[in-house]
Amino acid sequence: MKTSEPQEAKKQQKNKRVRTNRTGVYVRESAKSRHLGRPDKCFDICYRIDGKLTWEKIGWVSEGYTPVMASHIRGERIREARHGGILGTKKKPMTFGKIWEKYYEWAQTNHRSFRDDFLRYNKHIKESLENLTLAQISPFQLERIKSELTKQKLSPQTIRHILGLIRQIINKAIEWGDYVGPNPIRGIKFPSTAHTNRLRFLTTEEAENLLGRIRVYSEQLYQACLLALHTGMRGGEIWNLRWADVDTVTGTIHILGPSYAHGPKSGKSRMADMMPRVRALFEGMDSGKPNEYVFTDRFGEKIKCFSGSFDCAVNDLGLNEGVKDRRHKVVPHTLRHTFASWLAMAGVSLQTIMEMMGHGRIEQTQRYSHLSPNMKKQAMETLHLMLAVKREAGNGEQEDAIADAIM
Image 1: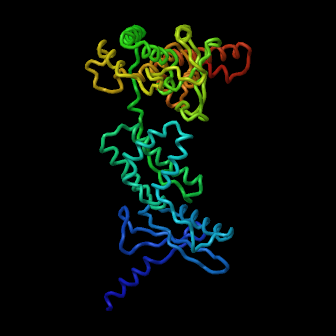
Image 2: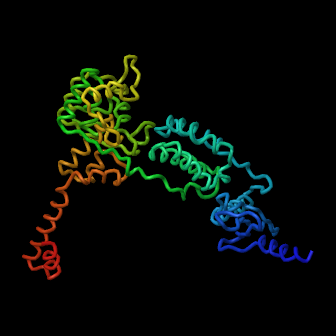
């Protein structure tokens, strides 16, 4: 009995609540469970309602709980009591599966990629998270999902899409009041796609040969590819194009924004200017009603992707012969990439390219910076000229020093 007394005292010490720097939030160490090589910790909260002190266990660090999360939950408990909520009859937490159903109903009219969301959820997310409440989802579980996706040899971009969907679903749950607390995916590092960016772009000769070969297979596919090559439009933007968006008088194409379920990927509307070849293309086509799609199949339905004739034309020309790295393969997206590359080589600024391509972030455009080697030289020449003029005008020694250092 005497030998067990110190052990019992140590156990009690471990389970003792210690105040944190968050009001009403306490932490206690487990005498048995360990997490990341240290004793696991549990967070408790306390609050007074009508003078009565109430204690509530929130959860363990190993489950993804933090003092911030516990503080949020404590605040919600107090708000419920003050504004008519009954603590003993709190609304039952919704599972991730139920939140998904609510999200998918919203996405069908508000999110352009809701079909892709449906496939990603059912194939990669449902089995792991469907029956868990949002409070039960920890960063550790999400890291494990990320690890499993990596083991399946999915591309970094695909993994980013899957993790992004989880983040979006939980963010919507928070916005709709179905969950209180921080998003557990907030600390998850998304895989980088920098090394997967497409590198191959076509020379003008290759582009003309490819368009000519595609035209042998399909006039309509040729029209779509010409549009991608000379406007930089994405495939989805081309297939969603309606005649109301095409104005051959002003020579502009209106690519619709986020108020439409199938707007551009960046979520912003933009205008694409027609080069003479594109204008001639539209003027030579039989235009339809304003709300009709420009490109339809033989049944009058909207086309959803580039046909296999594109690959046939590429194979005929041997453009992918011996190419192993997917970044160097010629695919339909190569046409858009070629357009941006040509702009950079022509000396167009990255900011302008970003706007013309509809990129959401400048980082997406910076991949083309190496194709505009004259831009830095032009910038230095401009700066040198400005400083030289100031020095001649006698504007001070500072300009002299800067100019001398540059020259």
